[in-house]
Image (cartoon, rainbow, N blue to C red; front, side):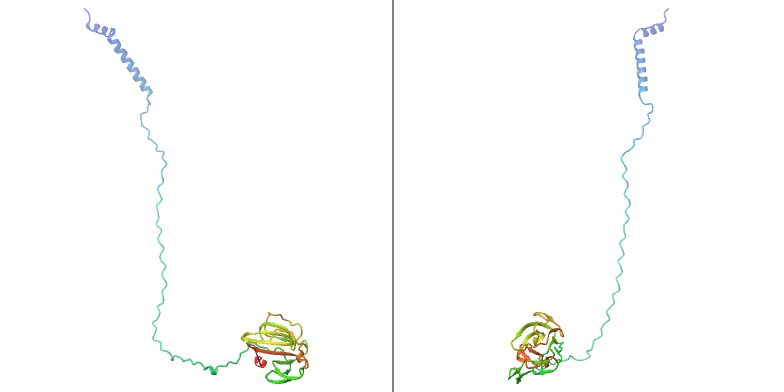
Length: 241
């Protein structure tokens, strides 16, 4: 009597069962190979963020505003009491035109051009006899005696306006001064010590006594000194005061 189980088993291995077993073996090999190919560690590694970190801004400390300086105490003006005038307004009285002194005023500093004896005085209102010319005539200056070569000084500060040789009065120097005054120095030696345009001070040497005045040659050696105010001859003695 045959065993049904044995036939079934034999039929399985003879037919379809062989293929099934072969499929299972291949499947098992495939699973084993896949398992050997995948990484053994299945734990996920953390991802590192390589982006550089931006530093946080430093906290801003507010700057305290400077305290305003205390203004100095402004002194208060004391209340002024009513001012009582000491005296009433002064009335200024102007002098009459008739009382004003119109006498010409010479420059502030005036010195004598030469110290010596006066041998001929100023005389424009009265005729005087001229020993040299042998006649009567006016005399527009003063003649001061001195030895030839004696230095002559400017009577006041001024400018040399003219230097010339006069036919009668010889070598002559004329100085111009403030106030319209001119001083004339005649009978000098031929070459004065100043030139036209020079500014001279009071007492500065401008020349020396000579013998060049033919119109007064009968007199002793001297300086002929004259003064004009606005072109008119005036008494040198008044100018020299």
